[in-house]
Image 1 (cartoon, rainbow, N blue to C red):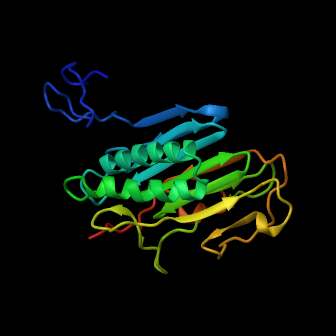
Image 2: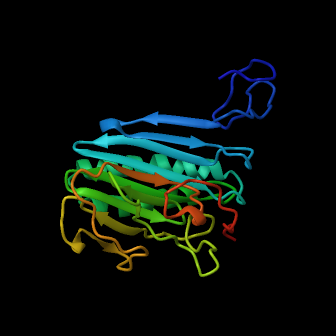
Image 3: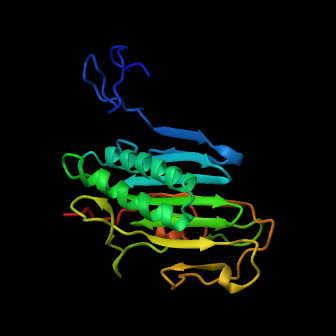
Length: 247
């Protein structure tokens, strides 16, 4: 990417190596393709000067792995925190799955390691995380913060797989970095081929929107950052102005 002002080389932080100018279009939109038809799109949106999302898509044997992190905008360099968390979590998930760990254990280890990586950054940035591992045995999701994952059946209403780490006022209560110690994620699994309510289980046991498990033939999972609470039944992504920064 060339600098819009001088034509110089753009550094990984989105500033020009030569003139130092910030690049307004840097990471404004990210599109990725992954294994088995997985896709990801991240957009800066209308109210932010930078895109503080980070997303990865990769595979490990029969598993497809997606990680989405969203920088807490009121902390410094939150976009860096999101990228470090996503890259770290992805690498650990792949390594642990290849080593034979259960998906739940791989996700837990990866989240803790990602939190430590973010905590080691200067200026105490913070971010959320939601990670999904999908394969023949089902979908396994881990999250910290208010980034979300949904199961989107072939027909019917999307089913949220996550419950925000937030208090009654919607203020976020957990995140990675930003002074937070080792954070253990919440975990949930969904086995679409099962035909009993036990198909949807995990930690925490409470399910915000109880629903019958989807039937075989359901098509898609979705992980997203910044999902508007007013649109939670539709899985639509939007800005969330109620997030408070960690102190």
